View (tube, rainbow, N blue to C red):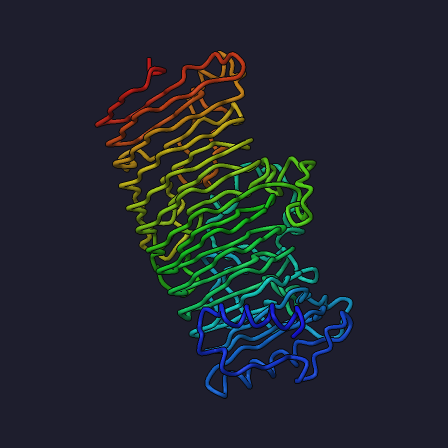
Length: 503
């Protein structure tokens, strides 16, 4: 038995749905060439359809480079990417063919084009059950686009970060082309709409388009041991329930690494709930340099004209809110810090973040924002943030402009937040003029730590909060800073323990 056969046998033995091992379909038996020049998506789709018709099975992609347009997942099928197997996204400008067209008739008012469509992807599945993509292979999205139109929302305040205000219409148009320009293009590596019992494990995604993974309305989803090195969002979990993301590495200098959302993409407000993100790494190295191991740091600015992104975030789309989210034992490197945001009427509650290590933090290490963007149907109100515990945080090399921030609204405080065992090391350099600043409320602005400009304190700034407990909060600066470490405005039921910096 060859080494390759042994490896394939081990992979089959580790299938997340063992029943799929009973039937195996090799894509080469359906005409796939894996030569990097032949379009192999039709052959792969035929193998998937055959496995599904037979009641379930495993579709095997052995070593080779499979040039593909859209691959359509079907229920009770495992896609096994063998050692040395590469699924390469074809480019409609260079290759004969196109991706499946974006779904028609979707009301794209309250979320952008990318969130509103799934079929225009390299790999997609809708309403599928017991589906897995596993194995050590690579998904290379070289032919995907990162761009797409914004929401058709009439109220434009809050649509884009304030850092983009100086951009010209031509520059915005380059990032957000008209919907007609998207016909036939693919802008996601993997897209899942609804469905349940999905497993993604072991493979690498390089250059994943707008989203390397977009899962919307999906239940019982496990994403484990992936490496993602991409030009925009890494893992987007939208309106999902019962999800585990574990032992993943996500490098995304231009957008968020792992992000939980609750948009209006399914036509109604749906909470994202029961989510565990554990033992993951997020970063903002130059794209491609995580996979090749060089971890380069030449890029300084993301497309929103803020510093590189790459973080874990709840938001920005937040119509349905978030409930029971845990973020544990995760590492942030050369990227923005943890952001917890609800600005579209949803309620965020029962959130725990613990065991976070951050190095070279490009904006605030911790950012909690309740806003009043209300990107949603008539009657959308102001949401809420309550019952958040953040503990065991060690963040160093933080941009001096952005302390940890908790920012509610007048009459709508962020409630019952605990910060415990938090250690923050800033670069320092704030001035007396910075200390005198009074940030505007900016209730309907897009939420980003930089939205308020340089803040008047260097360690923690809180405004419009009720029930804030700070316990064992330690902070320092590498260089002198003329701002006070803490500024509190309209903060009630406020308690500080074991925090020598407080004054």
